[in-house]
Image (cartoon, rainbow, N blue to C red; front, side, top):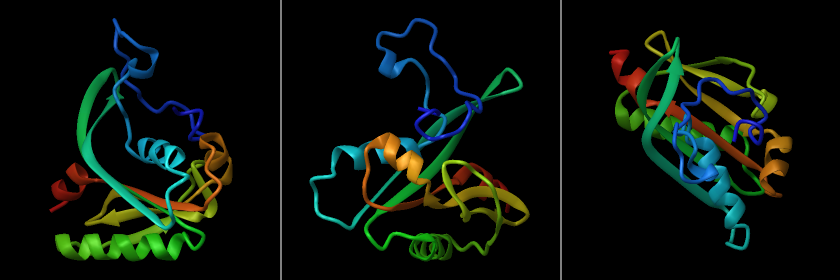
Length: 158
């Protein structure tokens, strides 16, 4: 999945005796799953806003760590950084968090259209417009913007 997302593996946890190559590792992030859903629903009318909240597992220094995250993808002709930031504003406001966004680099997103979300001094999310190469890898022809928010880091920041 990392290849489709245009990044190197950053800590996937592989299953030793897997039954299917589709399920050979634990998920390390949610956004690729949302893009997979969008790729299978190109026949559905746009705009499409989808989200998922759940557990991800990442390997760090030969240890595994679980995190709860929420990810959202917005697919539409007008999907852009501004639209996805408005959704993040609403979510963070509902949760009672103030945040800032700093410039960032992440090859799954369009250069200059991606940011790192900072809450209480902690980096808690990436937000931005999905890189056209990534969209092509998933067979998606409509612009997509999204974010993935680490809820554990967010709530540990208070």
